[in-house]
Image (tube, rainbow, N blue to C red; front, side, top):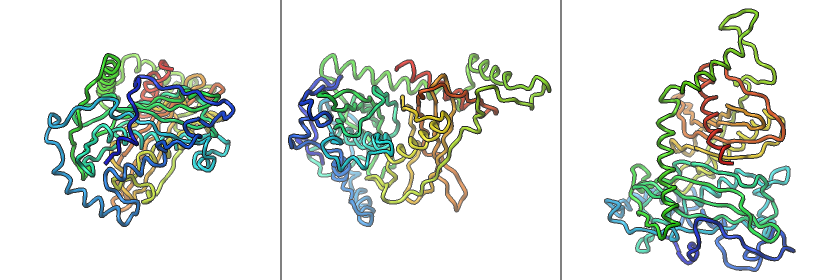
Length: 434
């Protein structure tokens, strides 16, 4: 299972990140990484997760190890009351990505333009969220955890700094902030060492779910006990986040009709595309400085190989996020004619796991624009060539910004109009918080 000495840090103020000072002559090399201290390296996160569940690094052995996990079902708690409460500091972790201290590590994270691949950061955040959740449920009496903890939702990722330097050390930190009966909310922060201090880069909120060893049924997780008013406030924010997620799901355009204001907006867009010469519902004209939504798509295909599996023998969620982000970024770049900057990620829903060997089809759509902002939705589905069936696995939402004004995206059909409104909703949730 977990080794608390390596994973857990002394209790600190969990509601904010620490800023560390150091020798400015090193610029991107943080003192605690450069002086040879034994710190938890980002490359060890997935190795630690394999130890926790008893997964093998070899594909041939991995399947047998997963089969053996079935026997762990008897170790599951029958109710949440049977589990001891945990404090927030019990799950607090710090993980380091030494891009400045270890130049050989940069290759994996570099883009052609000598910037950091944000898709790789998404992979690291996903792995860290799982490890934080396992730290919360840690049982020292068990050698392996009977829980299968997987990502259910990326609630939001807010960028506090749009530039991630490729030659500066990075620190990830985070802990559990809210717990349901079978779900866990984990908040993480990323900071980068530059000019003598760790400066904030992003804040991320993930929602994880616990399932049985076969990853089929829900399993109970330890309740959480706040320690003091600061942690009580954090817990209340977690409850508010849960209520907000429920409200958004209830108001989904896939379930209920648009509001009166939204209907008027769609009708106004429709009127602006009518051909005044023909006065016909069928005759449509694209307004100036605009692009039809059907012309703002970009698609991709991935064959899911064993190399991209997670510890539960399914495709790694971080890999899915990386591929979706890179496709969404490419679409935003093509649409805006620029190198867009990521503003926020929100509401990434993991509906179904992706099996090894699947044909994963990714489709990105610019669904809303405003001034210099581009809202992109990426839909992923698994295609079975034998049955010819398509099954949605994930939906991703990304907000990008351009250094110039971008064309307006215009829906033509009713389905595109719903995508437009959905994109506008996600945009309005994101931009006021910036």
